[in-house]
Image 1 (cartoon, rainbow, N blue to C red):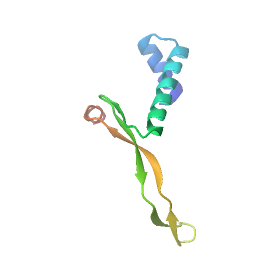
Image 2 (image 1 turned 180 degrees about the horizontal axis):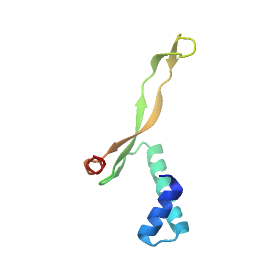
Image 3 (image 1 turned 45 degrees about the vertical axis):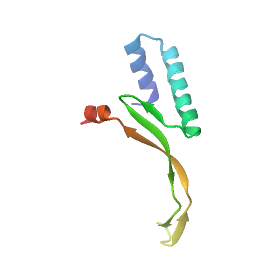
Image 4 (image 1 turned 90 degrees about the horizontal axis):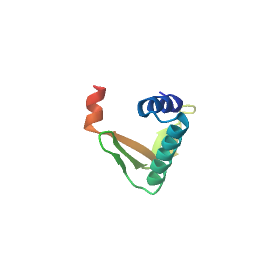
Length: 90
């Protein structure tokens, strides 16, 4: 499911216009992004939690040359599903 399909599904379920639904969805994504940017954990009850995770610097192997290379430390976004979501997916 992509964003457009999600907008249609929510719009039909809530009887909101597609335009209003898209505004709400965009606002939601913005607020989640801002919270993660500040280092906050975004917990959505019954769904899961988004949080920024740090990856340490490490040594890897270049697939092209086979030589050892240093992979710098980075930050990434992790998602931990709630028990309720896990049960739905089973």
